Length: 112
Length: 113
Image (cartoon, rainbow over all chains, first blue to last red; front, side, top):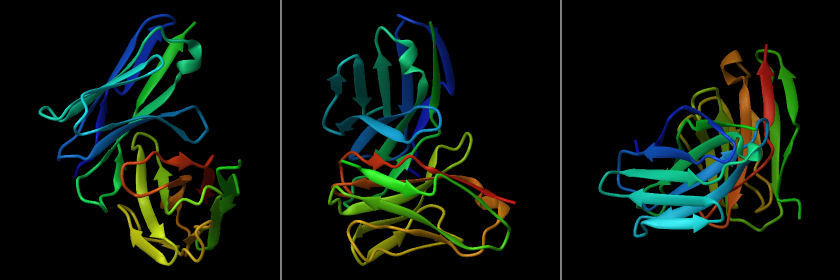
């Protein structure tokens, strides 16, 4: 399975600190995506990074991809209480009909 | 712009009952999918569709049926509900199956007693 697995499962930090979450996967991918889910809500797309990219930024978010290690990281800088949510990585394989597979997620708590 | 709309938001079923979860999108997306979310397991793909008239199975298809008669709608049918199908169900759509972001509905919380 190409399923991603996030690490850690849960993370608690103070407001203003940086939060780093990692995702590891097993087989070669075409792209990897990060999503956020607030409690009781649907998932919201954050960033998509393709296998030929190493780093992408979006506002306070920075995503890196290391295909040699089959891993990705999501960094949230200067965290806010509103960043409290679950974060999921999702991977898609190299063939055109490969399904998007989600990992179990990291639960982030940002304490004001 | 409504995006992806799921109905109902909550549902309680008795074991053996059948029902249909509705999903509609207004973005003219070709790709639609259904996931179930259980604690500690992330989202697992049930069924997906790459366009009207085309559906395929995901990771956990047993006990569920889908059809895609129009681009907009992708209903999920539970044939004979079982307690193991208690879960939160999400519908998602994207412009294409490959390498594009998915838009999710708000979810349907289903309890089977």
